[in-house]
Image (cartoon, rainbow over all chains, first blue to last red; front, top):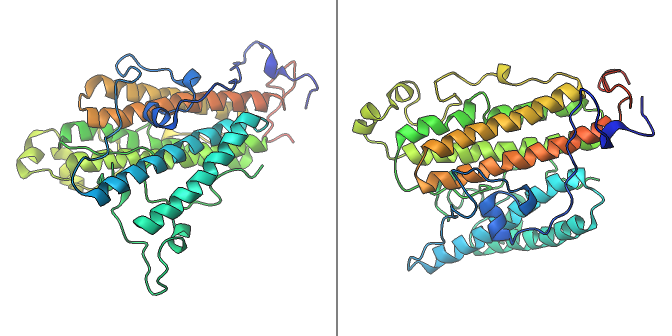
Length: 154
Length: 205
């Protein structure tokens, strides 16, 4: 069944053809999260929600410096986490892309640091990061912090 | 290549995109809930991809279905967070007047997967056909249908706090469509060059 000259690169009757995405220089990570993709070439907006029209919730300007610090950390966590999500799907279909791979490795390392810092400064976001923050062997810690749907952080 | 960041389903206590809504609005909530349990909603999307992946003939396509199916679980949580925040401070008066009354009678302020018109979530909304081409075309269509729902929501909803995550989720549908298109091209490499329909690569191995 396998053919040496597959039909994937040619037009074929009664078959759809979707071109493979070429690497395009990603947005900065904040813009990427705001727009919903790291790739400008895939950002095809709807006219009722044009590019840049809608913004992320701002980090609160309250006098609570701990909350400000937490929101800043969470924002970076979301930016890096989302870029990794989008890159994962890209690499699933472009596993040979060196630029994509190197960005994936760099951001994964940053994500590990962010998870560890967040656990130390606030509370653990993952079960694994519980051992990165709290060093008290008698404290569980998984229930600390607001649940994600509460809108308590940015 | 074992690159997936998800070794199993593990919970991370954050949303993929932040949801922070200031104003209660049950009328918007009963529209947005469609992307939780409606025919083209995130629950349906996730279950579709996570069901189809086992028998996919191309391993990388099974991997992509796993990763997109997992992301859809996060989208489901974003949608639920929107509905929850739009209704958590609901007053008795708002319950009676804002078109949320029928939902309130059955579910109070709890989350339950249903379409905007009240039809409950059902697995009949998606297919897992066991034919790679049929399944991938279903996935491509699913992303387009979900995009249309987000377009429709963005047309009728003015609150910027709600529009921001909806716009984000809409953009994801376009990206997923592209990835499924690339998965289709990878799958076509397994097919007869002259006749893609000569056999079913999920069954005739």
